[in-house]
Every structure is written in structure tokens, then in C-alpha cells.
Image (cartoon, rainbow, N blue to C red; front, top):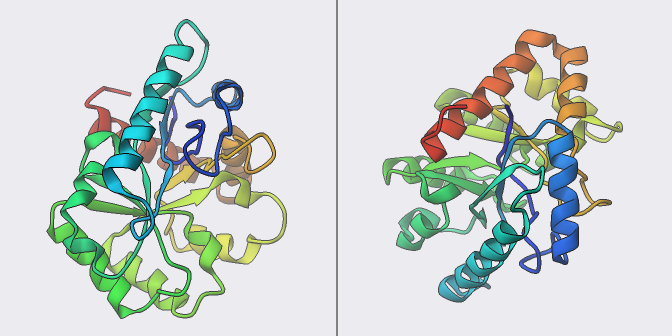
Length: 238
């Protein structure tokens, strides 16, 4: 069992799947790659999108997708959002409508230029408010100012993190991934799939690569993290 917590499989909602056929293709590929459950996390940009209008659109598309996958060999699907960070986000009551499957967990996309003390403080304040942030694709920001301090902060404070499966292929992220695995800073591996060409589903391939790099125990820990979050978010046993 594997739970993919970050994907853009929801059609006609953001820069992910452009139509229902692409959504179905991504789900079929995910299932073939060992994903049993997946959460659609379309981008929500708080300073651009209107909450009610955007969530209504996402929920309507999700309902359509749920209907389209009946009797198909695809993962079970759930709805959440990937929320872009902004200053003062921890004070926004509306965040509770943007969590993963209505849980206390929220997938938070950092602002590339805001790895500063204010961002770190907001992560703690989100937890104090009852929400649990999961910081999305942390490997992508390795060139950002304050990144090393950010890594120290997440380790010291037990902040949950996610890394993209496709980042383990090619040389672009080799050094930062070595740091993240050695320092045990990765909580979840997710696809962040957008289309057949842009980050295709590669969970199983990434887990094999991680086993080669870090050993089976490390891979099993990531799988267990996925299963534990699945129980937390859905209330179902893995």
C-alpha cells in the first residue's frame, strides 16, 4: 500500500491535468506504479484565488473524476490543496478548508524567496493553531537564501517534509538529496505529478532508487510514514 500525498491529477483546475483523459492516464500509471491511494492537491494561491470560487471548482471537478473512475483499476482518490505560503498565513481561518481530505494536515508550498525567520515562525504558529504543515518538495529550494538554516530548523522542530519522486533521477538534485537522506530530513516521497511529461508518476521507481542509495530500512520507513498519514487523514487502516 502506498499513499501519494501530492499530485496535480485533478483536471481543469490548475497547471496539472488539462482534461479528464489525462487525469485518468495519470491515475492508471500511478496504480501500475504501486500507488493505492492518492490525494489531488491543486495549487491554491491565496493572494490570487478566491477561496469559495476556487474550492467550488475543485470540488465539482473532483466529483466528476470520482464518477469517471468507477470500476477502473486506479487508486482511491481524495481531495486537498497545495497552498502557497504568504506572510501571515497562520492567522487565516480559511486554511481549514484547504487541508488534506479535511484533516489537520496542510500541504504548504514555500515562497522561494522567503526562507527567513518569519517563514520559520509561521510554521510553528500553524502547529499552535492546530494545523500540521507538510512542506512541499523541499529539495527544490537548495539555492535559496537561508536554506541551510531552514534544514536545521525542520530537524530541530520535527517539521514534516515532502520530496518529489522524479528528483531522484538525473543529477540536478544529487547533492541536496544526499544531504536530506543522510540527515533524515525526508518524511514523505510523493509524485507531484502534473502530466505524462511533467513529473510523471514515478513512486515505485523512486523507492527502488532510494533503496539502492540508502538501504531497504530507509525505504520501508518512508512507506510506513505514508501509511501512517493515510490512517490519520482517512481514518482507514492501510
